[in-house]
Length: 82
Image 1 (cartoon, helix red, strand yellow):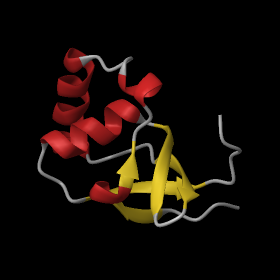
Image 2 (cartoon, one colour; image 1 turned 90 degrees about the vertical axis):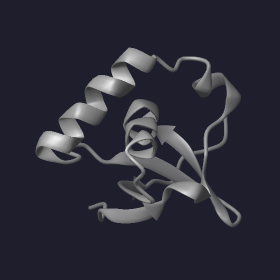
Image 3 (cartoon, helix red, strand yellow; image 1 turned 135 degrees about the vertical axis):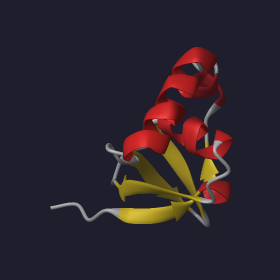
Image 4 (cartoon, one colour; image 1 turned 135 degrees about the horizontal axis):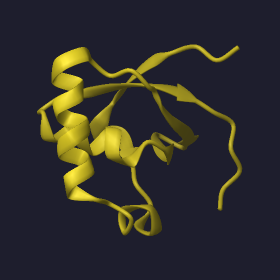
């Protein structure tokens, strides 16, 4: 079973292909939801040396970043590189 962890947002790398799918309106909606009820769904990251690579949760990550958060709740997964 995976364990929820807090990850420093500054250590999470977002691949260019994933960044291209960013929807600013969705980020705003999620940020508003996070303000009201907190982050409900953890993001998924994989380790890549000293940093982490985002596997899933781009809009949640960007919503937390826009709110000035320095950490985000997520799961560390063992995913192969794409």
